[in-house]
Length: 139
Length: 139
DNA sequence: TGCGTTTTTGACAATCATTGTCGTTGTCGC
DNA sequence: GCGACAACGACAATGATTGTCAAAAACGCA
Figure 1 (tube, each protein chain N blue to C red):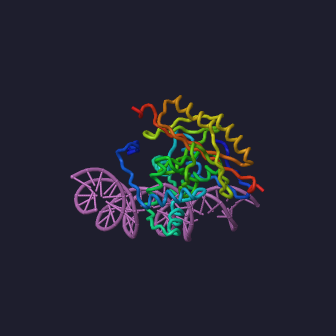
Figure 2 (figure 1 turned 45 degrees about the horizontal axis):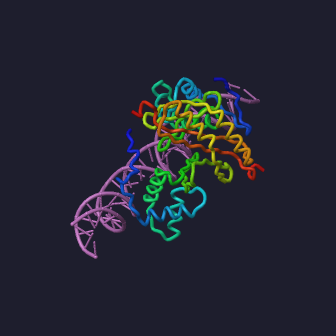
Figure 3 (figure 1 turned 120 degrees about the vertical axis):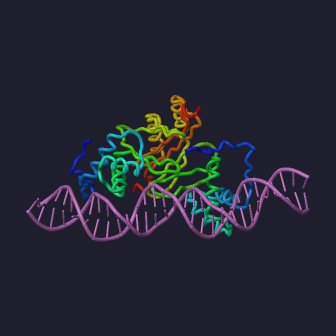
């Protein structure tokens, strides 16, 4: 955690530092793995933090836009959010039990950069998700 | 959560050949680019084919499960479907104009196989989407 | 070829995550 | 301390996708 008050986007819109925003950030900082907006909302409630569901959605959106958290969109479900560890990485997700393994992929990064450069694309980002059956569930 | 995940590719399940299924397949075969289920439904109606929206959804799902079409899930929107060209490939999508470039990635395939094997995962599939700004829109 | 079984269809209702609304509340600059 | 204005949040609205189930169509078989 760093980035405190005074974060201001170029457009001149001030991002205010509120209890709710801090609560969401703090929760994400302490939590492992992916969780849906609704789950995070419930977790905040359990902690005694009173934060509206709408606010949770908006805060997560803002954090995702700022690149401070990961968003995963698994087939057939809600969006899942997770604090973003430093550096770029991807996820290997078990279809059956949902277990997630974090994998770094310098190979992929390099490849993606080369491909996009070839086509003249700029301001590039990419998402890569790998789904499979983990050894435990395979049995 | 259980999966009736279909490995029923053998002769057990008869996939019946209906007018509606043919219509959807034919439309996809003639159409370039990605389209939503609703768009495809409208296109069928314009052609004079009478196919229910529910059927379109189910047919697309079936085709996607069978690996005959691509599914893309862009942020903030509907699922987009497209006929799948032979071989595995990925997409480079322009954020501004939506233009799509198809790219093959043997490097990525190899990498993905290696990583999943390392973790013992089986029955693996992956999705990779690259978003950026194309040269035209960058200006 | 005709018949019965089984799948598929499709209009409509239901679901449910996400977004919009808008009066109220709290923050922050001054 | 004060006022402007962003953020909040309860609720309603949206809208894509899925479930339902009677009717229709396809296919296997005699």
